Image 1 (cartoon, one colour):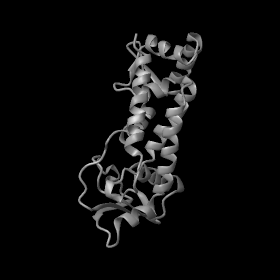
Image 2 (tube, rainbow, N blue to C red; image 1 turned 60 degrees about the horizontal axis):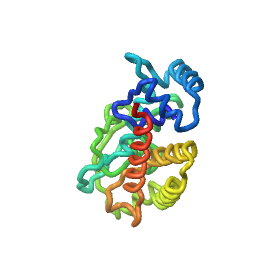
Image 3 (cartoon, rainbow, N blue to C red; image 1 turned 180 degrees about the vertical axis):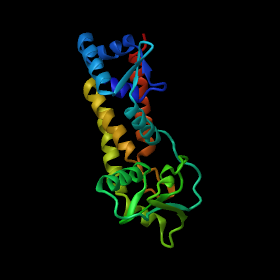
Image 4 (cartoon, rainbow, N blue to C red; image 1 turned 90 degrees about the horizontal axis):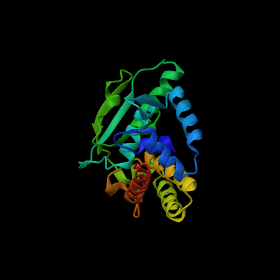
Length: 226
């Protein structure tokens, strides 16, 4: 509950009194919450500053990626695609896995082994471009870009899951279960490829999911008001 609340808060800090008030809504005793907060600080998920609780470094990075999925991260698209090609071989498996995570985190998809791409429609900088194992380009596909997007991402599957989550969130009123559904919503948004509208199938639920999650975060923040 605490991590969900802070991940959706800007700035990401709350006082013990605010967190205790929110915990009461979920039936969490104050003593239990204090133990959970102590353990979260010890694990590095939270940190203390001037008496308040803030997200730890690892979760701050998660919040940035979450924000990109929850907020409108797009810009005007001119039809070009980002492309990153792995040009360095013979690296340890751990380094290869870390590079795949970096490219996936940047919302690129693997066209073939070592070749990653996506439409160049995001405001975020291409942070992977400085990696010495990669050579990066801008390109335009010769074929239908919408067909390429369907090849790279399971758009219909993502949309179907998104519509199901919207229905569950709307139908769920019990506080703890509603929090769990909202956590599924934000995880689903984190997997949104954030493609230009012209490449998406009809009925894409991305905007509805972002609006529903923003409304839920407003509910949580209201609980913490002291």
